[in-house]
Image 1 (cartoon, rainbow, N blue to C red):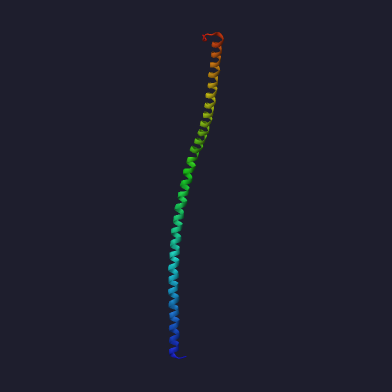
Image 2: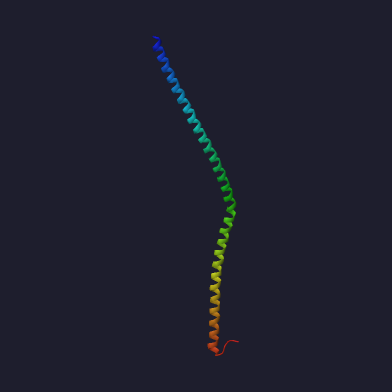
Length: 113
């Protein structure tokens, strides 16, 4: 081999090595970006987990109140039903009493004492 061909081969090898070195540096930069993004995602995920836990606690704190309100609503509906029946019974009693008074008045010709 001649001196020129050895130098040319060494130049090619050096060029190849520089290209490999550049690619390795870019790969390192790319991995650093990926790791930074993973760290950001991990941090955001931990914030979301904290918010979910806070929301769970809030919901658990609100559950007894909600259950009490449902029970009160059921009681109120029952009381309303009872009230409607009592009104109907009262109307019936007043109606029967007025019939009795009217019948007494019609039979005796004078109002009840």
